[in-house]
Length: 358
Image 1 (tube, rainbow, N blue to C red):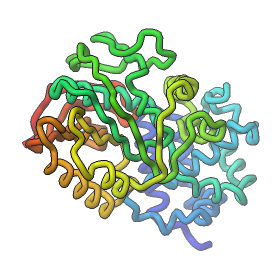
Image 2 (cartoon, rainbow, N blue to C red; image 1 turned 90 degrees about the horizontal axis):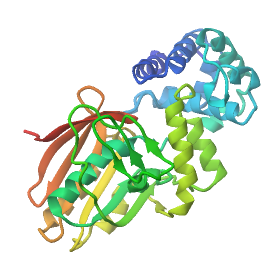
Image 3 (cartoon, rainbow, N blue to C red; image 1 turned 180 degrees about the vertical axis):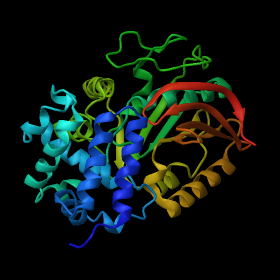
């Protein structure tokens, strides 16, 4: 298949750096080892090439092939089909030892080389429950400022777990929010100054869309979401499992649709009596430049139609100057505020106090 393009190994190492920074030393080491195998033209290169990674090297999110490969292998581990590698994956009871796991990873990739490219063509689906802690501060700010029930519209909603944000419990040393009896606890949610945790919003409507939505009650959904959760991060696993167990008790509609066409229909007319919020978390990298521009046109048009009795807001958790930022844009007026800094997985969320962007 020829030599591996530098962009493929760069993408693997780029994602390895982020895994290390976000608290997954196991994946950081395994991705570095995978990059070296690609440089040798080994099994990892054959699988990545067959999955189309070289052609996708210029995509906005260059870590996608790395996460898809790791997710596909993790799926095999969770299914019990890679027992040698499972010994090093804490997600299934193993002990993380990257040095010993690295050669076993490559052996596993070689053994399953025929099916891994097809598994890698599945869309990356994480539905990170911890991100609800970051989005919560935006929901609280809109409810506080408008005094109205919330109409929540999430794009890239996956299985809709973050649409159930008000059914979770958020705890920290500086304050807590939510249902004390919830099985889903997002611990150490906040740091620094406390956000407006005394606000108790009412959700009048919650809906989502996704190009490939997942059924929160299906076993296949559980397998997919767990496989894309990094195996040495126990807290993320416990939050996800608890949220999936809670989901059937609170059905939420997630439609199969692209963000732009879905929002065009739902935002065509202002909705009096509620505050409509379009929300997303770590979605923009998957839209591409044209998709982002089209999304902005829809939001701007909806903002222009907003009225005092039908306010409109755009709430996002996306890449910031350091890790991720929680930003809120509200209409009428079009004011943009930086509300908090956060991790891409959510906590700790650091409230910065309604700082108006210049």
